[in-house]
Amino acid sequence: MISELEQVSLFSELNEQALQDINQFCTRLELEEGYELISENDKKSNDLFILCSGRVEIVTRSSDATSSESILSQHEKELFGEISWITGRKRTATVRCVGEVEAILIDGKRFMSYLQENPETGFLVMRAIARLVADSLNHTDQLLKQILWNTPI
Image (cartoon, rainbow, N blue to C red; front, top):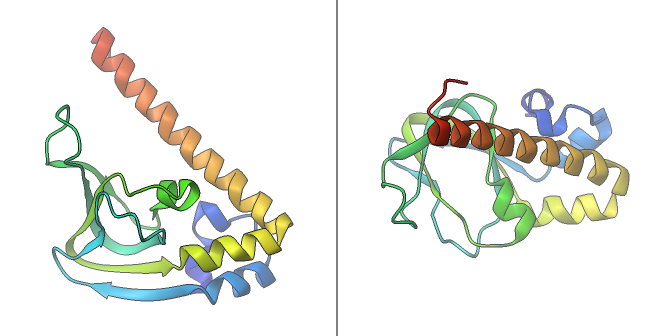
């Protein structure tokens, strides 16, 4: 799984030893259509997931402002579950398999403990998470401007 971890932006700056250490917290999953990796409002789980093959849909039902339809579809090698992992808060959406999916589960508690015990690696991972969150916020900002001002991006 190390070669797959290297392909994820979260781990792109890490050395071989850190990747080997993190690999110990990883489990490969082979899942079928409809399986829910993450359930909206779940307060117990804070694991992260890397999508290796297949597709998942991300659905939210928690707001009257959104429908229960798919609001986002992740593509290969994408990370998800990071917001709950960082904040320790409940899951904000359901992540469900569309067809067969191969993913890597990263044990969130063990991973966070490892990062606290290895601050240099922790800094690199948190900086990568900050980039992911900033990119997502920037994308959301652009979509909001397009909706509000009805102008193409």
